[in-house]
Image (cartoon, rainbow, N blue to C red; front, side, top):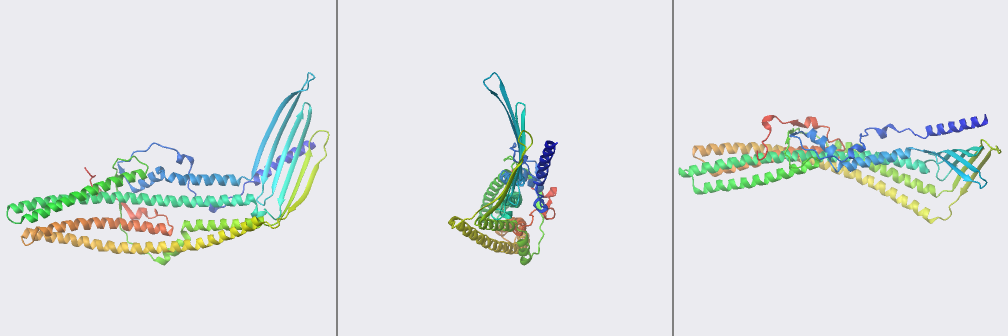
Length: 497
């Protein structure tokens, strides 16, 4: 009966300690946690690019296939694994052995042993160890229950305990990994968007150059025809031919820029290089009104880098507290009990005690405290500097956005004026009151103004994204309103098609 009660008590202790060993996870640590797994790191065959590619599809492909983004996923998985390890405060082990010995008198002795042990580390710094032992020698059986407990009272107690610090550090590292994962994903999204519209811009510029070359070809033919009729001079034909050569050179450079940009973009998405998918998404120009002070205030509460800096400051504070705690004297309680459950000797043995140690004139401990104090002061200074840098970045992006918007308005006016100038030049030449050189120059100005206007519209959208990144907002939050799918008549023919 006594043995049965003792075994039940041991089993109950093990169950209670195992249940208590899993601390609750605060909800804010798991909020927004991305769903990543080891499957995201598996090597895959490089997929071919689709025939048409929207910006949304490009983002999905980039997040799934970009090689550099795999390191951010691996870092987050490592942090998750470290947190799971740190949260396990107990270890449960079981073992056993069987051996047979020859006594030399034509007989054998068989010895069987088994044990189950639970070690639990408390966040207060204490430890509890419960072990159930069984030792059987032929028909003689001895079993026992052993319990050992220790608890520091000063040095290494509470928040200064190794187990508490390991768990705190694992939580902090996991949160840093989540924030860095977000930053890596934001940077990749920016690169994909800029790469996508960079190719769109290069394709549009290529189409403009092709149209400009066609206009230059017509201008040469017209000039030659007018020369035969005596309506112009040889120099006007030469000017038209020079403009034609310039257009051919511009077309060659635009084609090279388009091909290189297309290959780099497909490589970023993890797709096969060499294909030419049709990019169908276009930018919608939507002027924004922003206030630098409001944006800066928003950034100070949203930027992930500032949260990471605060976590670094917490690490420095914890390191300072630990270094000061190590300089304190130790005062530890300990105790153990041994309860035999069988055999001749059934007396319970127990031990209770207290031990202490006092560091005297330890230079290494004193220097460790000073080093931690310096690191803490540097962390505070780093936080202040980072806040100033964030405000500066936001203000710079706000000013850049305003300048980009003003430039865009001017370029729109310039494009309208260039088209009007071309119309007037064509009318003057047809009526015989203008020179052909004016028409050629007007065509060149229209081509240049159109290209500048397209670049400025895409550049304005990039400035909006850079401002969101500086503030700490999700760069994809306005994707549906700031982009649209191109209509069939807007699609440019593929280069070389």
